[in-house]
Image 1 (cartoon, helix red, strand yellow):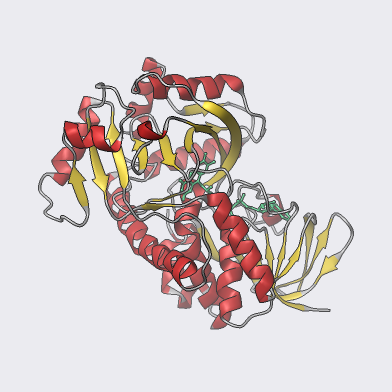
Image 2 (tube, helix red, strand yellow; image 1 turned 30 degrees about the horizontal axis):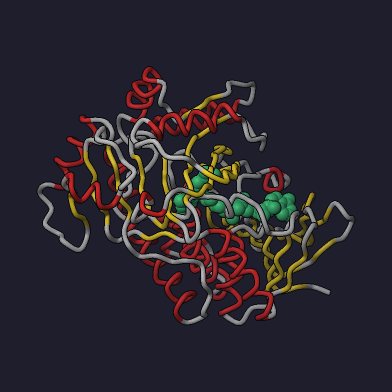
Length: 416
Ligand SMILES: Cc1cc2nc3c(=O)[nH]c(=O)nc-3n(C[C@H](O)[C@H](O)[C@H](O)COP(=O)(O)OP(=O)(O)OC[C@H]3O[C@@H](n4cnc5c(N)ncnc54)[C@H](O)[C@@H]3O)c2cc1C
């Protein structure tokens, strides 16, 4: 039987699209190649950090990365290969790293970050889904004098108490009792929040199931058949085929399915790691903390703490490489007093990273009932609810991309 809306891929982006479409009264089916219990959307840092967030492609990113490489602290690992797409991606990334783009991107981050935050609040306070939502700000910590100075220069002249607070030494100690005295400075960006991503995913899946959203799991979609400028049906590895009015593609870093329709999505998998462990309670950070120069995030959680880091380009191998875990710990420990990390659990995932931090969302130009919800990169938890909202508008009002202002503003299909 022909379905109404099929969402291919049940990561946070797919589930948020399903949530939004369901709320608008659509019959939604989510199809996933796995069980939706352990993809990239599960083991990440859980920051909802759209506010005062510098994009990855910012001016000086190349020189700053090279400096960190010389110090042995760089989070970036590059595996050169024969895939030309990766070099095209890198070229675009460097092109995007300019002042004008950075300013525009930061404004877009705030606009869509606020929409997302409001939807997360609805999930907690109206739908009753518990995912350890904490709206306590994100502490940005600087370990290099010059980056702290640069940041201070920007914020010294802004008078917005509800937005940020520049910390003195005592406040740093209060928020980061584990830290040693090598930290150069810290600023609390108050509008940001953090969550437990696994609790969110499992809570949302349960809510959707109970609300009547259909889940077809362990079903990899391998092909798409087109007819008269529309997707007629999709085919699975298990030889099932599914027809629908509308298809939403949210397959994370995997772009092979999009390629079946000759769509080359400019995104690349950027492998990251997390280490979840127990530490003495009195040393836990008070809120989520970004070690700005090291690209390490430390998130306090209900029972434990999580460190996330690394940005590995040119690999889609999910193996946990012990050398990278050791490197994260070594870089972190340089700024911490000694303590034992107990009951460690390590994990890897892949950010679906576009070269300019802007997602790839909107209708396919050739097949009108196919919509992409892809390319959320290192900020998928932060923006997924607003992407769900935008896709919801496209479907409900049967809009073309040109009729949807959010697509024109926030889709990488319409930005260089
Ligand atoms: C180390 C690390 C830390 C991070 N920290 C943060 C953070 O603090 N804040 C933040 O906002 N973001 C963070 N992110 C980014 C965030 O995790 C991602 O942007 C987000 O999870 C991407 O969600 P997604 O739904 O696009 O992809 P995924 O979660 O990868 O989901 C895609 C789904 O599609 C399914 N699928 C793929 N292909 C097929 C197919 N052919 N057929 C059927 N199903 C298919 C997969 O099984 C999967 O379930 C982090 C990422 C990493 C790696």
